[in-house]
Image (tube, rainbow, N blue to C red; front, side):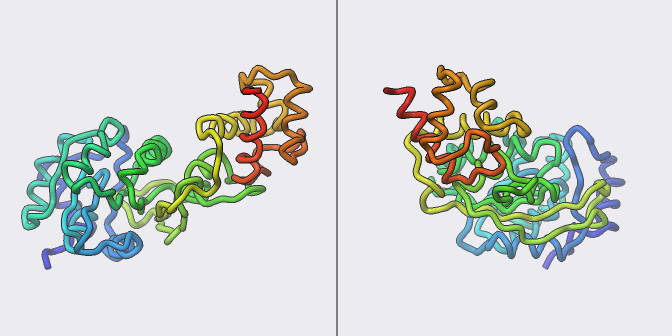
Length: 291
């Protein structure tokens, strides 16, 4: 087995050798605890049959562990200064392909066709805090190319992903994730496991694609528009948020009647509504605006 990249000594040596400095703009915090990396690979359930898509390999610490278990690892790295470093640190591995690309500009579905025979990837990543939600939301849109996601994120973001109604962490992200995926926090990771140290704790969360969405809805676009509106002004009632920013073309009295017909009190707030509640509301709003 090749020596682990994920140690403080090796990480500092790589930085000195290549004159590398961490970039705040890319949210670079590299893991330096090899045990955590093994735990991430365990949580992702990586086997020799899998082609893994990694986002943000850094110096290749997690990539190395994944490559020792997977058939192949495709790693997307936005920082072009890391590409020559990765070619050196991962030189012993023939089942790794590094692509210098921003995940938000990458056609994941096309990549799955080209690199994985059209089959969905298991995605593994230590995601930058500042752009976690946009990346996760983008990957949710590409769910046909995603079998599962096991990602390291800020602890509070992981808690939002798996939160339920009447929980302060519950919101539009919770519903978007849980609509398509089962969410499970695997472990909490302390700042001391990174270089440089972040100011807050992290968490590893696994999102596994459901066979079917959590709820059946008549119009997905309308469903998520209602969700977005309901949480756009969290402290306002459902009635007020829908009337203020929904653009549904309904008078307040009409919207009140629609909400009530879904079995909901117009004074309810989005944070108290389940995925099923939003599905019922979607049906009634759809019926009204298309009648």
